[in-house]
Image 1 (tube, each protein chain N blue to C red):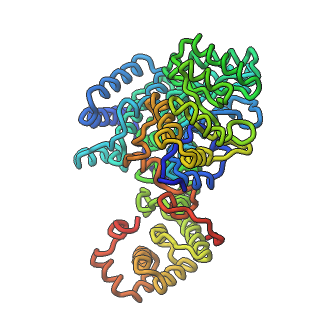
Image 2 (cartoon, rainbow over the protein chains, first blue to last red):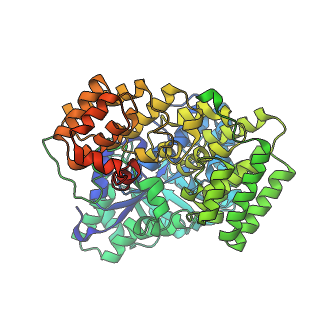
Length: 308
Length: 301
């Protein structure tokens, strides 16, 4: 458990790929809300129906599952950069998006952006930015693993060309090489604490020491790969131990995500601080996930060798 | 049983329910929410396009909030008259508005209507699913949604399951025995409140009684408790194995379990009545009306 029982938000985590046990431990470590961006599932989809079922699980089962552990679940909807390359399919997914983009708890369109920086990727990136503008939605931009610096610059150019306000756009998977430009151009700058391929949390400590907390957000981007659903609380702890001011830690691990995504009107602190009776009836009550066990959300979780 | 049930929602009924919901909402919603609602309904009536329905349906909670629908005793009994078993007192305003939109979406062809509602189901979030399943007993063509409602029971989301199974007359009126039995059994598995299932007493059947008894044995073998409401669905099938179960509960159970077993015996077979004679205090409490399933359900849902 975190020192001071600090509340954190993980504004980018793919719970579809994670277990119920992860929810339990995340709650224990102070995660009160998460955002699950729609993304690539590790295997290319070949039918529009699998996209629809995936979107349904983001606004249905996954939302429900999270809330059984007292974690508020939000999501973003899009066709991701990699699969935008299958144009006939992307075309059909584009038709689905308006059906989902305005639903409750959908805080942004995303992840959109570049993977290989192909023409098709740019086409669907722009189309989705246009849709975001039309529907007055925030945008979560995935920056590419390869050719990151150019991809990040180019993504921001395109957002501005499409008329988006930088404060309505979260540029994700930033690193030491891209942070300056993202912040200078006025966008939200998110860092994914993800072992080996993205940001490490010791490096993140140094970045916050250098840049402070303004418009900086951290997330885990945890998915089916070697990743860590506790990346945000662990990094919060490391920051506190590294004598980073507590208000900075709270901003990058909680407040800024709320401020950025709260602009959607779909994500409010009261959702987890003072859930209404209705919310409790529709989401918090019941325990199908727990399969008959007493919900453990209020009790500290303890490992036990006995399984009942 | 199924065949004798009248279609509860003929067209005139639909307009009565529209008026009813409209009145309730006018008493409760703020002016801005009402303006949005009236505008949305007008748009739907002018041009019943599924696109307008989808947009309105998605926007509902943001426009009208999610407060509990507040109904007077009189309004509650009116609801029961309009559609027997209908319990909008358990609804919220967004659910009432979503139902109102579905009722104001009037297409010429039933198939068009059903296809649009099916499309809503197929892209519904948790709250939308709850609203849709709750609305089934007052929608037009209710018979046509039977497969959808049964499919809905397969959900892993207890709140969605509850929207179909609890405080809802739809299953009692439309489900065949197999689906009905699965619903009751699943309600036990997911720890829903059996006492809130409509028709639990009237739709008892031998097969269900057997399934419930088997379930109780499974629980006992695993050292787990058994929901005492289970005995309520035994009806008059209290013989053989089930009789032995009740005897065991009366002998070994906690006080509340003994109460439930006694109630089951009271409504059960002649042999069960004999069993009840062995617990004269409970028998007397039942005969004097101090112990009923209703009173029992106050503390054990």
